[in-house]
Image: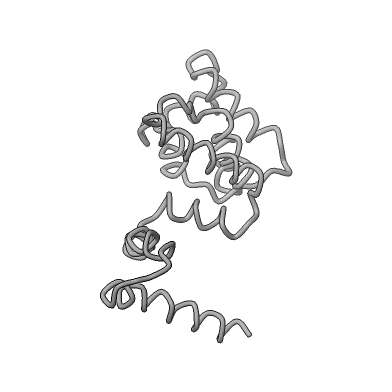
Length: 157
C-alpha cells in the first residue's frame, strides 16, 4: 500500500501535496486510486512518482523530493527570467548535493516557518556583508550576525 510506504519514508501526505502543488484531498484521492489499482484515473506523472516510490525499496525521503524536483518542477512556470536562473541554481544544487547541510536547510526553510524571521534578517543584511565600508548604523545592524558567528565558532571548537 502506497500510504504505508509514505509513512515508512516519513513523508506526510500534506507535505507531498505541497511539493506537487495539489490539494491534500486530491492527493488522498490519487493515493486511494493507486492502492485500488485504478491507475487510469491518476495523472501519468503522478503515477510514475507513485510507481517510483512503491517499486524502489532502498530510496528515502530525500530521493523522493529529488525525484519531484527533477520531474515535476516546470521551471518555465516559476517566474520571470531573473528568478528562473535562481530556481535552476537552487534545484541543481539540491539535486547534486541532496545530503548536504545546505540542502537540508533549504528544504527545511521551504517546508516550515521555523526560520522565517532569521531568513528575513539574513536577506536584509546580505548587501551590507558585501560592502567594504559600513556606516555606524549598518555596522550595528550586522552585529547580531557577527555575534552569532562568534558563538557558533566558539561552541564548535
